Length: 137
Image (cartoon, rainbow, N blue to C red; front, side, top):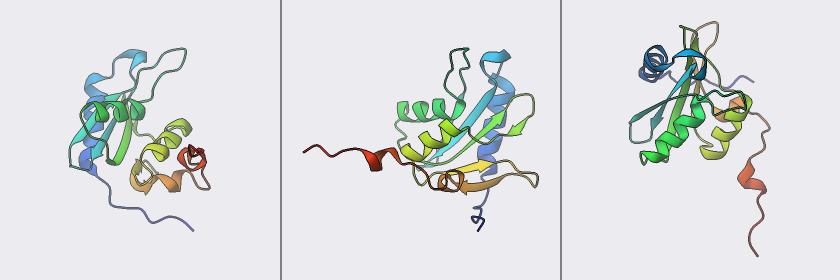
């Protein structure tokens, strides 16, 4: 069964697209993310690409949100530079988003336009890190 999509937060997409268009320069910063905090604030970020790896825009957004005191995120989206539009999160970002915010919604792009899905729809039958930690005895 296909999960029901929630309404799309177009303001969030526009915020990420603006950052992608104005702040992504060269190969080091090619993706932007925008996340909506539970209090309504929009947090934006860009990725930090490096040949050794590096954080995706979604992960930078999580850290930026925490630095600004926003510990609860409701929705997140990533947008590529050079007008690539909405890009779904990679596997690592999906897992981190699930572990940090198990109820977060993610905006993904489709052939029919963007749609909003719960993170659990992007990681069915997923491993949840906190569920497998041992309690201190």
